[in-house]
Length: 236
Image (cartoon, rainbow, N blue to C red; front, side, top):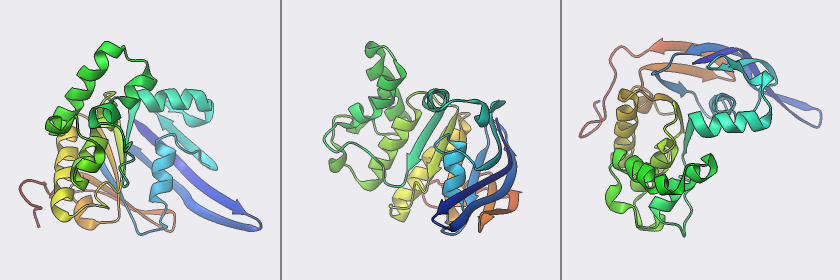
């Protein structure tokens, strides 16, 4: 599904050049659950933005389903991103004055889904994250964990093949974080490819593979031998 070769990202400010990614290479197969781990400033969010077509590398090649990012226009990248990719961020990014159901429906509007199907698809997504009892509520009436589950429902409403989750438990208490990881594990079991960006070791061990970055470089890429599962409390 994903092929990255010598990905490098540099930022120039006046005469100062900063390297956020330094010649990073790896492959990700369909159906994997991969955690990208590293301390702040390691390049993990920059890498996720490139993988999710939100940014372009300074050099190197990135292919998604055999298509090179270098060969696609911004409009073509946006179409692929909307149809095949879902995004979950640490800050939820829900519209405060809009119901949970309407928040989840937003990607369907941009995708041109017939209006009579919007409610059906959104309710299915909310059922998948166990939030169907909150569909008429406003985000401010939900707990942090429920808001993140609503954000996940919005990310999967278009039935994307891949879900990018950038520190999805970062603003949550341990119990809510465990519920979010359980949802992501269930989605992976259903066939979704999950790319999780995290700095937390216990969270990364709930993936099936961990890519570690440091100072923009890939320092390790390992499969998890004993995957932890979020079921009624984190397995320690």
